[in-house]
Length: 231
Length: 231
Image (cartoon, rainbow over all chains, first blue to last red; front, top):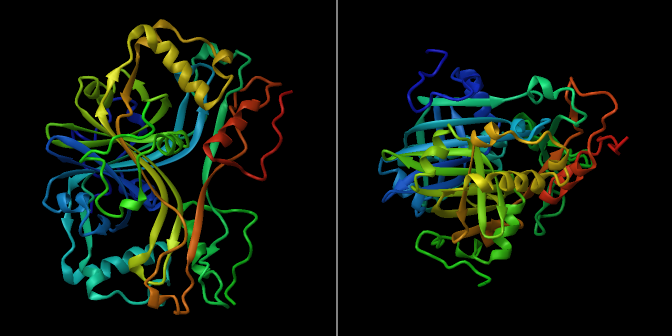
């Protein structure tokens, strides 16, 4: 397989092309650090942008929801979609307003979604849970036929896709570096706080070890978090 | 002014209507806790979803960028837009896969963007910086005419808009509460790390006090952050 996605008119960055990345490893890394995408689709000329959970499996992007969802019902008809994933990594404070910026990683994918076949839905949903919390699926009350029927899973090929990344300090006009103005980056990060047990949790159940897998998203445990070793 | 936005066919939540909010205070609070929106627009039937910074002023949503940006050039022509803002607050772990969810706050706004007039652009850009970092604008090297010309600022009325919010523990099927499965919420939060001074920062400049204003977005300072009192 080619290591890069083919650049198209839609994925070509015309401004700041050095921020663009088309190699699969970079695109995958951005996608694998995220939980929520924004799905764009069009109904009667009107764009809709719907936030939803997604996951990647190989060269496919998946998302799911209620079979009654407008977004899923429209997309499974085969209309064009645009799926965007964005991580904000910091505020970039420059010496002029003009050069202020954001450090971020984003991916934009164009394509047409298809519905996962009924007989494959269970495996896809397991894949979603295990991608997030490896080991949880086997612990859960198994899905009923009705629940699977009520769930639609869509997928889209990663084909026409690009990543856009900004990192590093501000880039000021050369003559502005001498100005006595604080400049730099204010980093933003996602933190995982201590789990909040369900008020109706049975006694003796500790938060599962696999919550530590969330660190693979680049999310950090909050320092005050208590140990959650299994009882 | 009415305290609520009028519900329309596009903003009516057909599923889970109890998650929908149309009162201005709730919508404003979600918008004011965010930095990045996802703007949807359509070109030749193809949806595009572009992440960009935004800010709110009264009943208007603003965003900006390079005057050469495809997104801004298209939208200023007056085509329909959908602007979505999403905050992810936690993973909701239920006792069945089906009832797993996300705690989130989101806003979806429909409308048509307009360009801020040339003579009003400077004030709008000041508004953006001051909204994020009150006091910074006056410290900066003032914008040049060329920089203002190279920047497009768009706004859209907050008119056809709704918020969607999920909070609280999982809601399981009644018969599942007796299962020995850990359930609860894993909270996610945005953390502001210690500022990283520009490598070319002049000596003697400390990170500004107004960085503390970022707490108004609901972002928390990282505990390890050093004191940044002005020198």
